[in-house]
Image 1 (cartoon, rainbow, N blue to C red):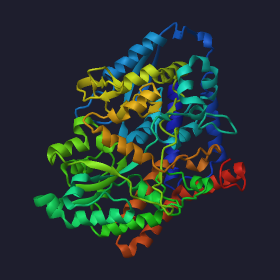
Image 2 (image 1 turned 90 degrees about the horizontal axis):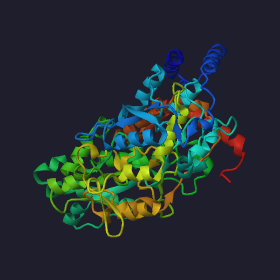
Image 3 (image 1 turned 180 degrees about the vertical axis):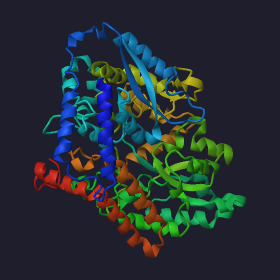
Image 4 (image 1 turned 60 degrees about the horizontal axis):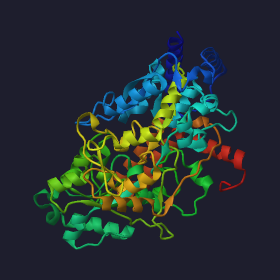
Length: 569
C-alpha cells in the first residue's frame, strides 16, 4: 500500500513540477501553502522506518533472505554482455547471498536517457531500491517530494556493519552532500580513483606526413588545423572532401573544456567559481564567451566539423568518422582513444588506415600564466547513490554498497578472471586483454558495477598505479601513460562548497543542461558578425529559465556561510 500511495503522490508532484518548469521563471516560483501542506502530509505518512538494530545481523547475515533491486546502466553496446546477466552480476549475486543472505536483482536503465528514465521510475514508484545518477538535482527534486530516504541516521547507525564502505569512501564522500543545517544525506558520493578529465588528441601520422611538430601553444594548434585543412588531398586522397581538422560534439562545454579553461583567470576565486559553477561545462564563467568566440572563428574557417551539433548522446556518427580516419584532432575523456579493446579508436585506425595511423595526446592550451591548466575531477562528485522511499530494505541495500566497496570485489569487477579478461605481468601489473561473451565489460573499468569506484583501483592503489598503463586491451601502454601525465599537468581540483540545499537548483537541471548546449552550439555555428548577439540571446534565455536564480541563491548562501571571504579557509 505504501508503494502505491507514494507513487500517486510522486506522480502528482512531478506533474506540478513539469508545469512549473514550463513557466517563464524556470519553475522557481514559491510553493503555495496548500502545496506545502500536501507535501508535509504525504511525507509524514510515508516516513521510512527507523534503522534496524545491528542485532538484526548474525555474522553479517540476515536470518531470513532479503531481496533488493539495483539499477544498472544499459549502454546498448553492440556485441556487449547482458548488463543484467553476465559473469560480473553472477559474482555479485553469489557474494551477496553467501555473505549477507541478500538476493540481488539488477534492473537496467538506458545510460543516455538515465535522468528521464529514473524520473519516470521514481514517479511511478517502480524505481530500483538502489539508484545511481550523475545528476544531484534529480535526487534533490525527489528528496523535496518526500521520495528519497535520508541516509544520515543509517550510515552512522550501521557504521560497524559497513567497514568497506567507510574505509573506501571515508567521511569526505559519505558526508559530501550532508546538509550543514538539517544534517540530511540524500545521496552518497562515489569516489573517483582517477581524477583525470580531458586530453587533446591529434593524428601523429598526419603530423609526420606534413613534417609538423606536435603543437605546444594555442596558435600552433590552430596552425596545425589549417595545415590539415589545406592539405586534405595529401592526407585523405579521394576522401579529401571528408576532412575534419577538429571534431567536437553537441556537448561543446565538455568536449572543448581545456580550451575554455585556458581562457579562465588563473587567479579565479573559490567564490566566483562556485557561484558560476552549477554547471561543470562552465557556461556562465566570465571568460567562457571569449573561448567560444575562438571556436566560432575556427568553425567559420572550416576547421571544425560542420555537423557537430546534429547528433546527440549515444549516436556513433562522430566516433565512426574518427575511426574511419577523417579527423585530425579532438578533445575528449583522457583515455577515450584507448577504450573498448579491438573496437578502440586507435585499433580501428590501425586496421582502416595503416600501421602508423594513431592519435597521440598533446598539451597545447596555455593560460595567461603560461600553464596548461585543466580542471580535474574532485575525488568525490561522481555517481550519486540514493535509495527511494519505496525501498523497504535500507540495511540490505547498504550492505550491497559495502560489498561493492570491498577491495576484493573492486578487483574482480575491474580485472575479472586471469587468462579470460587479464594477464599478470612479471612486474605484477595487471594487463587487461580482450574479452568475449558474458566477460565483456560494457563500461570502462566496469564502472557501472563498481558504483562507489570510478577508475582503476584493483582494490589496491599501488597495484592500480603499476597497472594503469596496461589497463586497455590493444592499447600502447606508453601512449596511455603519456595521456595520464598530460591530463594531470597543472591540474586544478575543485573544492567542496557545502552550504546546504540550493532550492533554485531543484527540478531545473535537465532544462538548463539543454539550454546550455543550445548556447554553445548556436554560438559556435553563428556567423562571426552575429556571434555576440547569438551568445547574449541564448544566455539570456538560460538565465531567465533558472540559471540566474541559482547564481543569486549561491551568492546569498556563500555570504551566509563565508561572509566577505573570496576563498575557502
